[in-house]
Amino acid sequence: MALGLLSSQDDFDRRFRADEGALAFASLLRCSAAIRNEKSGTVSTSGSVILRAFRDPEPKRMLVECSRQFLRGFPKQLKLIVMPGLQDRYIAECKNLIGFLHRATFHDMNDVAYRASGIIWVYTTHPSNSNGHFDDWMNGNGKSKPIAHKRDLAIGTVNGISGRQVV
Image (cartoon, rainbow, N blue to C red; front, side, top):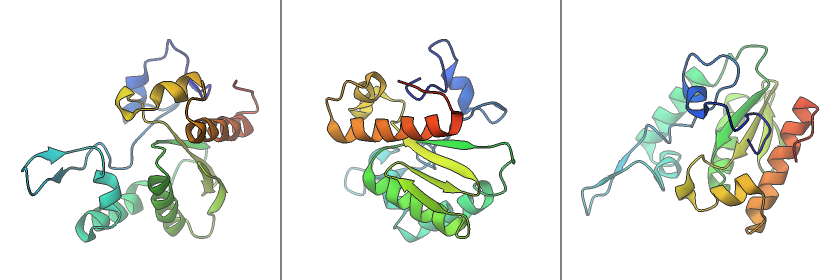
């Protein structure tokens, strides 16, 4: 909604299905990876899971291989990929991965966006109230200057693609 891609009446959950053809959202393994805490024995699917996957050998192999299979050969009509997650290190790791996969066409645009294979990849807040800045992102109330800056960059990037202004 903050990017002007969905209205408040849209069924957001429908956009996460494989058969969605108009506008789809996805998460880079974050929702399907888990790490066991060796001390407590508990399993976590949030927090440092994806960042650890970028550096631990076996998860990194899985991340790279899945990305090779699913993050190339996109339809020609695809213009935008929205990636949930605003942590600087996460964005940097994803940029490195996509840059590796699309060396010849990769172009860094700003702190939250890049172009690869003719597609703009833009990072937004994760659609969860538990991330601590979801409301700041959605409302644009500017409580957090880094979040407000990233929101402005994402909106500007999407406006550049769509030719319409989202405020």
